[in-house]
Amino acid sequence: MDRRIEATLKVMHEEIQRNIPVHELAQQVRLSTGHFIRLFKAETSFSPKQYMRCMRMKQAETLLDGSFLSVKEIAACLGVGDRSHFSRDFKKFHGRPPTNFRRRKPSTSK
Image (cartoon, rainbow, N blue to C red; front, side, top):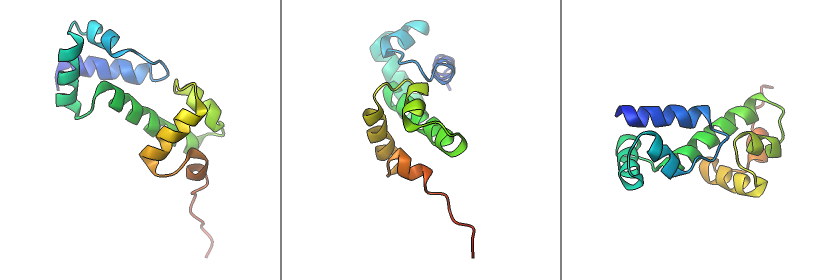
């Protein structure tokens, strides 16, 4: 993988709660915005915004499974200020809203 994209991914993972503008990511690796987006998509198969959304949804899944944080608190931890926007994105990604996702624990009784 291109070292500039690796550096960008590291920043995105470290600052998942921050909405980093694409032009800022491009500046950090000294590329024009257009060239950065093309290179990012060639290396990851996603645009930077799509990649960040997927990353957040995977982190949300982890937090829903492993914490007692509310959906609103999880959205805030991930840099999504609007709970309804977060729930809508989560449902698109996982096929169900975050509250239903949390309740999906399989029963262990026979």
